[in-house]
Image: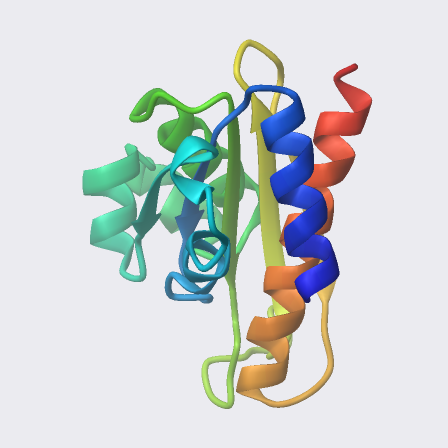
Length: 160
């Protein structure tokens, strides 16, 4: 994970950009990883840990209708989370994560390991993806952190 953290840090520093993160299933793990790096105060604006649906609504403006129609683990919610994160921050780049880390909570339609991500560069359109990870709760969460950070690098590279 150290390699991707260094890459994210370097890309954000080189682009004079900062990051905001809206996390659900990772519970602040991405923010912790970023802020473990020296110099992170210049690239990390803030983080929202919105584990409950109410927190997603209160802190990020996720619509109750979206939550009801699509569920908390959906691309639609990931998009609303990333939009809310950028709106409620000074950051240039936003990331959102919502998923089913397990071991409970999975369904046939949304199994354990299903994680939805959102990325957004201020002024552009958001992008969302759904990924299915294998492993236990810790493994799903760790893979989610790494995948999300790779998405930040990809977003920065595509914006050039």
